[in-house]
Image (cartoon, rainbow, N blue to C red; front, side):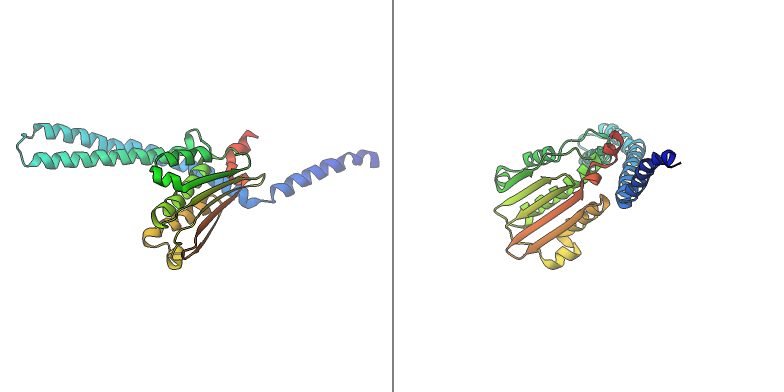
Length: 251
């Protein structure tokens, strides 16, 4: 009997480890499932907006162009129709950009390094000279939706430093460890008013948005600031969440 049950003990141990390990991080699994659910919902919304609102605007813009052609060149209504058509064209372009953002999770992902490099190209030479990016560790593949949120948080922090801090030096630190991803943005500028830091009002409403984006992907966001001593923003995220469901399915 002992010989028959001896082989069951290692199997029982593996089963126990499986279930205890599975229950060890329920919040991680829950956040991954929420990421996947948000991705599907974003795709559905993008499809419905394209099929309804954007197509309606395109149709109206085409009809307006035809109506503009019927109006005599010297008519007082001509400039107004032209201005309305330009406004509609701008709205259509913004709508397309929004749809692209909603569908971003479906597109091939780039690395965070590449996304920040693309952002640097948009800056003036003077602003680029103030920025320095430091990388530590080997970059890891990230879930596209999570990558997009991390990029938006980092970009907002950089824009705040460039626009508001009067900083001479701005540094971005990307740290990839075996267990987590860490992004730090620091500057030597004027700092943020403590009341704005906690309320997120007026020109620093972006602070509230950054906190919301971090919470949505399960990241921890810390902001340190002192008047005339600069600001430091630190975003940290467990690697299991940063890689998301796409990595889990691949393994």
